[in-house]
Structures are given as structure tokens and as C-alpha cells.
Length: 418
Ligand SMILES: *Cc1c(COP(=O)(O)O)cnc(C)c1O
Image (spheres, rainbow, N blue to C red):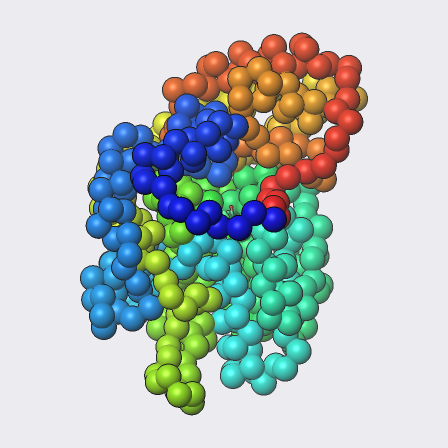
């Protein structure tokens, strides 16, 4: 095991070392990744980089010391609340990402169940398409999960979920859209189910939060209403660091009322260090991603998001059409926003994992392997628009190259440890 070198290096030498380390990193700036990095374009990079310089060291642990960060958080929450048609009095916090938003939503539902319904053994009901972060939350917070199979169209099966609720249910989950196939769950029916129990209803709009509102402005109707206009929805999560185009470390969790938001927070004043209140999982809290998220939202405005959303939806439509025109390839479900799940069609001689490997060799394209069933997952963002034609050409060539063969490695790879 190597120790920290005795002598330090100057910035030029350090950057040279880091440059070498990055030789094999995904080429996101060339539009080669369909996930992980979402590129809003040059002006967005410039705004984020300049603001990051300014907020490199700020700490949102204490907004008395840094009132700017308190104001930034308040404004970001107000802007997103208005995007999601929240009623007056809605309130939220920024978090470090979708996972933290979901952890906080589950924790809030658990606390609410304890306070309002005396539930000591909390349970939640979700579709098998709901994000892994809900299972992480269940694991952290001791909530029992009822995981229910999706319908043939990949949406949550409300009747099957209704059969799994009981008087210990604190949370019902729906997604807009869900991550694996990009379809929107029947949110009004799920919210009615939650409300009938006095339970919370979380809408996971980590992916859709910065796409669906602008699609609606462009005249695309979602298969189901999903935001606070739906009675019974108590919390919504939306990731600014995905299609909000902000640097990593920024998401929002909104509650329908400020009173519901109280179930998210932790307040403590019985140690030697003084009053301690925190909104989420973190203690010391980087101001950098909060400020850059605020800045990117302020830079793009509604107009900018509408423009980027239009290009995302048109690119997704081209991808779907391109995939469906290749014999033996299929798109799962009817993608509603920016996600496209590509699989082999029935009786096909194509292994999509082999196609994914060939795409990577051929053009450096990065798509997640997921399943079941074996699927290549693409989240389209504005950075992919310029290269989608090249991608589809490489897809045709890759399918021709590997048709009839099978990749030995069958592992999927949404997230890794080391
Ligand atoms: C990305 C994502 C999450 C998790 O967010 P992180 O920012 O990766 O922690 C949760 N739900 C959905 C639908 C997502 O797409």
C-alpha cells in the first residue's frame, strides 16, 4: 500500500497526473455517454465553472454564516415547486442527489406514520421498477418493502399494489418516469391508494422533474398526471444534476406542506456542541453544488429548459425509430421522456450485451447494461443530439458485427463499488 508522497506537487504537475488517469474515462463531452453526465452545452459549462470557483469552499451546514446558501436553497425549492404546480405552503430542501432525496422521503414517511398513526413496524409498497435507492432507504431505516411486479407495459400495477397495503403502510411509491424503461406510473391511482390509508405518496421524478414540465409546455401530454396537481401526492424528488444540467451533487425534495417537511428534519440539542439541526443526511454540506445548480437554473430559465427539452425529445424519438427499424431489436414499452431501453425482440438472434460491447469498441459509446430482461439503457440528454446520427450508424454496424454471437460476461452495471 502506497503512502502519501512526502513532497507535494504544483498544480501543473498534478493536472498532468490527473490527465493521465483519465485516459480511459467515458467521453461524455463528445456525447458518447447515455447516462451519468448530462451536457447542457458550452454556456452552461461556463456558468457552472465560474460559479464553482466562487463557491469552492462554502459550507451550507450553517446558513447563519452563509445566508447566501440559505437563499439559494429557498429559491431553487420555490422554482421547482412552481414547475410542479405545488400549492401555496409547499416546502423543500436541496439534497446531494436523488438517493439522498429518496432516503429523506422514506424517512419522512416513516416518521409521519409513527406520529400520526402510531406505526412502529413501517412498510412501503413499490413496483419492481422503482429505483434501488428505495431499497437502500428501507435497509437504512428499517422499513419493510413490498415489491410488486409491473404490468406488461412496464407501469406499476395498482391493483397488485393495493393487495399489498395494510395498516402499517407508511409509503406508496410511483415514478415519473421510472428509470428502467422510462414510462410514467399511474400516479393518481397510486396517490388515491396512499391517501385512503393516511399514508404518504412519493413521486420519484429524479429523471423526469426537469423534462416533463417542459414537455408539457411543448404540447406533449404525459400518460398520467404526476405532479402536485394530483391529490394525495405528498413528496416529489427531482435531480438538478441530471436533466437540470447542473454539476453533480444537486437534487430537490419537495413536500406538499411545511408541516410534512418537519418529518424529514433532525433537530438535536443535548450534547456538548450546541443546537444541531439538519435537513438531510449530511452534516457539513458543500455549497458548491447548491450554488452551481442555482446558477445553471438561473442561466437556462424556462426558455433554456424548453429548448434543451425539445432537442432531447426529438433525439429520443430518432433513437426509438432507429432501433425499431433494425431487424431483431426492440424498445421496451413506449418511452415518454428521455429514456430508451433497447432489447432483443422475440426470437431474435441478437444479444444486446454483445451489441453494447461492440458499440463501445467502435465508437466509445457508453450505455448501461440492465435487467432483467437483458437491456441496454440510454438516458438521452441534450449533449447526445449532435451525434445521434453517428450513434445509429454505429448501432447498425455493431448489430451486423455481432449478430448470432453472445457476450460471455452477463453482468449488469448500473453502479459499482471500487
Ligand atoms: C438517478 C435516479 C435516482 C437516484 O439518484 P442519484 O442522483 O443517482 O442518487 C433515483 N430515481 C431515479 C428515477 C433516477 O433516475
